[in-house]
Length: 383
Image (tube, rainbow, N blue to C red; front, side, top):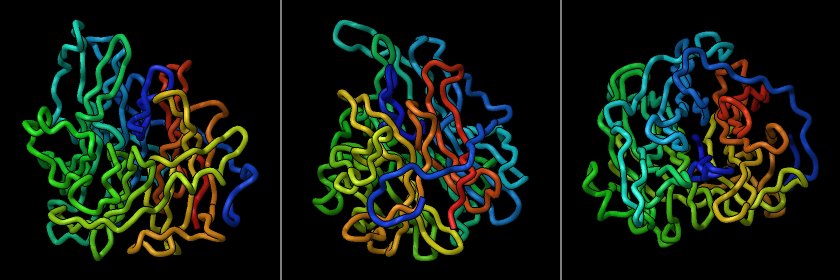
């Protein structure tokens, strides 16, 4: 998820507290605890949590499992895995499911200039969700992810022109997942090379809807909220650095652009001296018994593509149908924030109110550790 980490050091950004508007202090937070994923196959760790309750007794969570390629020691493979917890989030066990398994291709070689370089398909920043309103029981579990080609040595790099937001569905998270559909693309999408794979995108967002989406080069980090009126989709729009909101029907046959939840202009007020925020990434849409929230990751600009995730910020949504975040004096009202280890790449948060143990789960990348990718329970819960 790896929610947007394909850049920090050799990794390019994977795509990439209460009070009024603005923030000038760190919130006092409970002590974070590393979340242990039992039996996960990721030899370089786990990232990008997306927990979801089944309305009965089990919490499920899709996440990114990171492995080293056997063909190139610098090339990371990113696959989606599903874990489960039957004790409210106290213990998570890998369910033995890779929902992208039927779509996976072996690593392959590409020619760049005079060099032959290993490449891989990554399935990143997945978002598992339950749609109890769907009359078709075979698709009440749904998942979006960002599929992207990445090349390895000498400089591991994602090729975002060769990417899209994919979709699949199943009767249960540990069941058989449907064939992939290619839903959303931005203006950078390389139709000549990518249309032969699965087909053209169903929603080329840079041309399909409002001109306001024309500046979005790539869409990534899907957030999802299933409601009776349809499925709300939050997406990170790279290029214009904003979080956009769509409303789609249950089968993703039709979608409508509702507006922008946050833009880069909303970021500066929430910078701290050691947690700068220049724009937002990795949205998460959350319903609790009292409110609807938008969780985002604050991103600090770096040199070139070397941006840093600097924790998660939570805002309350006042009008979901019109993509309106609660504001005071023009600024979004901060509900709380979650910061990982100082100096680390941390953020890409997930939350489900039925997880009584973990609260907001956040991701952290520490380049000097083994494995490098980790999930943490912040123990911060939303009202």
